[in-house]
Image (tube, rainbow, N blue to C red; front, side):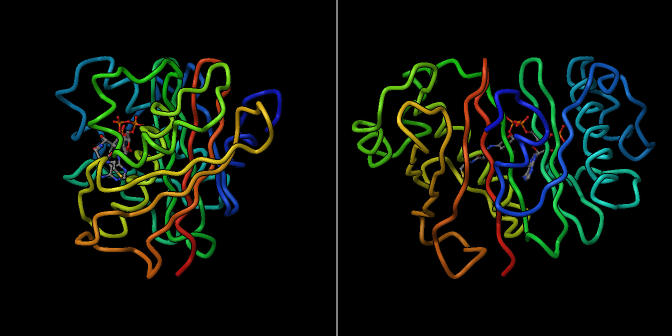
Length: 230
Ligand SMILES: CC(C)(COP(=O)(O)OP(=O)(O)OC[C@H]1O[C@@H](n2cnc3c(N)ncnc32)[C@H](O)[C@@H]1OP(=O)(O)O)[C@@H](O)C(=O)NCCC(=O)NCCS
């Protein structure tokens, strides 16, 4: 990863060509299309700002990827409806909002998540992690600023954001497990494998394993999962 966290670094989270946009401060008050406006009309101002920034970032990423830019409506389940021939993912957390887009010829789906790097509360461990996740964290290296349970939370959210649009099926955190690898000793980046443990759930692919990438930069963790072309 670059020393600077920028759109190129975000694109490195994916194994397909990606257009990324990090929202700048103006995008938090960017205008919305009327279809999007209808969805967010009753929201509190903070939610409206993050929604606007996500839509503005998504439009910029779509334009970079060569798409015609129009409304990105939210489905009833909240997932964004991407233009034909494109897939994408939006994330927001304290002080940060970004969107990534891939062309459907390159990927069937992408999932992207950013979170504050502060450790996951121990009260959440057992909601987010399966016993085999916790066993796997034990021998992982201790790296300053890297909290494995928090990374697991983010990795599973990223996976869900590409799993759901291709299956329309809900997944709980304990329906999947995650196995992390670190690129080099003490580095704050690596890959992870998501394993769909709940075999009753539909599989978007014959394989039950999905590869993602992660890095920690400054105050945040970033994860990305690519659903490769079938
Ligand atoms: C969907 C979810 C992952 C989003 O997480 P969040 O805490 O709101 O965090 P983020 O800001 O990173 O992501 C929000 C964006 O995700 C996108 N999103 C929401 N629901 C989605 C879905 N079902 N599929 C794909 N993307 C979705 C939206 O673009 C949303 O932003 P918007 O409402 O402004 O458009 C979360 O709300 C959720 O439902 N989690 C439960 C399921 C889960 O994570 N399981 C993990 C096991 S694999």
